[in-house]
Image (tube, rainbow, N blue to C red; front, side, top):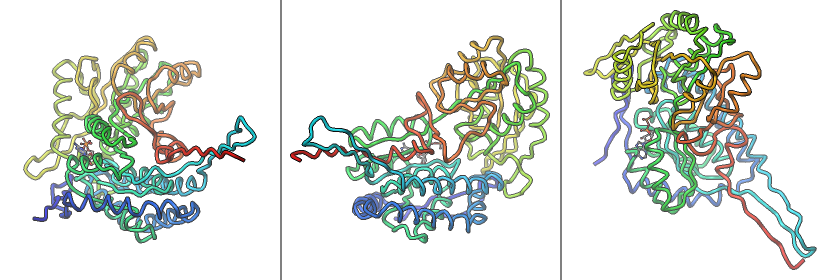
Length: 463
Ligand code: ADP
C-alpha cells in the first residue's frame, strides 16, 4: 500500500499536499542508481560540472518567488526570510560551482631519483544526506553543491515537515541538466531511511543536519560501513555583552540572531550574558524592541515571527518558560501564546526573560523557540565559564569595542563559530560547523568541499 506524508501549514494546520513515501526497495534502488552513475558523473570534467551547477542556481533564482512561497507554506517562516533563504541556498551552489574548478592536488619531492610522488583529490563516492525542516533549501544545497562539485552523486531525504521545497529544488537540478540519477530525493521515515543509508556499502558518506541524538545514532550506525560522516547538530549559543559594548547595536544583532525562523535555528542566540553595569539598559531596550515584533502567518509581508513548527516544539518552549518563571525569572516581554492543538498551529510571542539563573532548564538546553533569557556576569572569565559549560559548541557571539576583550573572548570560547559584534555570521564562503557535541566537519568555504574528497597518493617508481 502506498503511504503518504501529509505536509501541513504550521501557521494554520491546513493540509498543503500529500507526498508519496518511498518503500525500502525504492530507497535501495535510488542508492543503486547513485552507485551506478558515480563513475560517469565523477569523470565529467570540473568545468562542465561547474556549468551545470551554475544553470541550477539560475533556475532556482528564476523560480525564487514560487520556491519562497512553498517554503513559507510548509515551514511557517516569514516570506521575507524565505526569499532570503533562496538567495542563501543559491549562494552555496554559486560558491561550489567555482570551487569545483579548484580541486588541486600536489607533488612531493621523492627521496630517490627513480620515483615521483603525486597527490590527487577524488570524489568520495555516492553521498546520502538527511536534512531538517528549519532551512529546507539551504541545508540541502550546502550539502548537494559541494558533493556535486566534487563529483559525488547525491541522494537526500528531507524532513517530513518540509519535503516540498526540496522536491522542487531537485526537479530544477534535473531541468538544469544534472542527470536524474546523480541527484535524487527520497521520502519517508528518517529512522528507516537513515538505517538503509548507513548500512549500504554503496554509500560512502553520510551528511546530516539535525538534532544531536539523531546525529549520534547515525555516527554509531555508519561505523559498520565506515562511511565518512559530516554532522551539523544542536547548538546552545551564548551572547556575551561586555560593559563597553555598543548597546543599541547589541540589541539589534541579538534580535536578528534570536528571532530568525521564530528562534528555530541551530545558531540562534540561546543564552544572553550581560555585564551587570549595562544589564538594565540592555534589557529595557531589548524588551521594547522585541514587543514591537509582529507575530503571525508568514505569508503576510509585515510578519517578523511565524509559528513554531509543531506541538512538540511548542511544548518544549512552554515547559522551559514555566520552569524559568517558577524559579524566579522576570518576564519583560511576551510569554503569550496563540495555539490551537486541534487545528495544529502554535504561535509563541517573542519573549524576554530577565534574572535567569543557571539552574533553569532554559540555560541548560537548546530552546528552538522565540525566547531570550538574560543573565548577568561581573567578571569576563565568569561569562566564559558559563558560555563553555555545555556539551554544545556551535555558535557564540559577543559584543565589545575593546580589542583586548575581543581577542581574549575569541581565544577562550569553545565554539566553531564566533560572531564579534556580528549576530548573523553564516555565509557560503565561510566554514560553518560545531565543536564538541555540535558536530563534525564544516559546511561552506573552501573547507566545505573537503569532506566530499578522498586523497589519493600515487607513487611512481622504476623511472
Ligand atoms: P528536529 O528535532 O530538528 O526535527 P531531527 O534530528 O529529529 O531534528 O530531524 C532532522 C532530520 O532527521 C529529519 O529529516 C528527520 O526525518 C530525520 N530523522 C529523525 N529521526 C531519525 C533517525 N532516527 N535516523 C535518521 N534520521 C532521522
